[in-house]
Image (cartoon, rainbow, N blue to C red; front, side, top):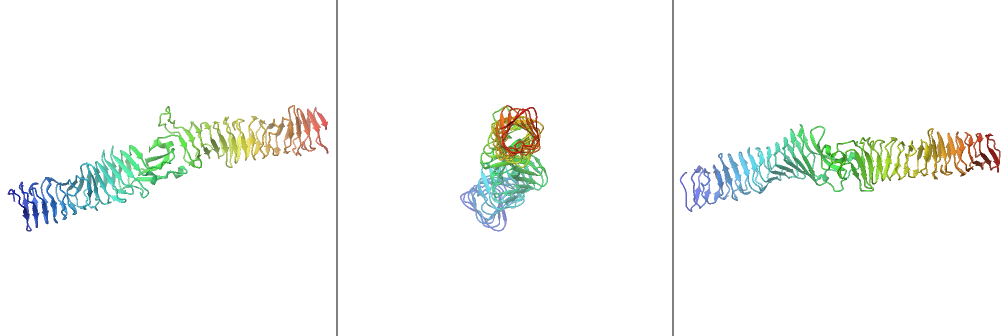
Length: 633
């Protein structure tokens, strides 16, 4: 029917037949479709009035159709053209798109019925669109507004987001086809979305809401695109699973990291890994930038959140990792070598190897790091368990640094201004300086061989600490509650206290000059041990299997046993008052040696080249030779 229709009256389509209106009509009284099909092949064919559709309205035209449509009938879009429905329509019979493009520029443009989309449905509007969409066609989101798809949709032709934001609040909202995102897409249904291919174009942002996951055939993130993943405690990994190829580029933006990663790990063994993306094939490329939010504010500054493709090349993982290696991957925090543990009762154990890394900060800047040195800060305890190979040195400015491997501190010097605890065995030859203390703990035997200058003292709480250099223990006092072995020569003037034992080993001559109070006794297994202070050997017994030289005066009442010799040297008068059993003999080379006990000189011969004073009674059977004088007092 191509007659032009004008006037204020109504047009009624009745009967079962299909009628086409093709004219450019201007009537204003509205249109009633009571039966059959009314086809409008001109966008102005139905005049300017409202349309009450209780049968079928077929729009085979293009342009902007702004007549309000109500009724129980169906709307069909046919033909190749693009037609826009801009009214707030209330028809309930559903919409079929059999050809061309149907644009809805109002969220209510398609009424309240289901949509069968076998061509293209373009939604250029905002709001909540809950009509169910089926069919073989595609859906396009255009315009600047934010549109929510909340229905259970089954369309298979794919989804294109060309403008604004499309939010899917149902796991089936996007049908089953491919998704081409050129603007902004949010998957937010706290469940698993299933699509074929998801591509985020340059400038686009695909966001996965907290608790939501995605199952796709392929995932493609192009350069300058953004993938945003919001995590919470209900998020399962992997967040995205692709049955085939994954191609990554652009930016990865993560929130809620603290809900899936432990912010207070006890050691590197506890550093978490959470899989964000998994592919059954391979992952090509990588994100150019990673941003992270939602990590616990108490996360130690030496721990960073790191994003990387795993060794299999099939998983993109989010991890907590040491900042020491941060710049090898796409980490949130730049690499640095400072371990700051602020909790005095807290500790962190490093079980991985710390090796030299390429410096990533300017080493000449105030905050730069050379990639080869470690700084321990804060009141807590850092435990290094691995055989580390970093080379430039270690600084302990606070708390305690524990080394459970003799190579744990690498090969550089140690500046100890707090506490260095060595719970290990072997030879530790790093030079130690600073105002701090060194603690030897554990059951093993540890040798300090360097010329050390630390001044905070030494505590031996377990095992054996061997000093093969007279300066190995620095200049501070020594608290020996286990075993201190001195395998060196020279003068050792550090004060020694504690319940432990002192052992003199090796061939050298060592002088103890301090007024020592240790109680665990003294063993002389080699060389000569010179006491230049009558209290140098503490209060315990002396087992002398080499040479004990007493170059001092006063009353020496420690019990002496063993196969070794006792030498009295120097000008002073020394009294031996104990009941001694040593068998190696006695040499008096200077001063006066007073025996106030008939057994004071053990059972060996006496070579007296100075003065031997016997201030005792009984039977003295030791043979006496030499050029010296014997005095009975």
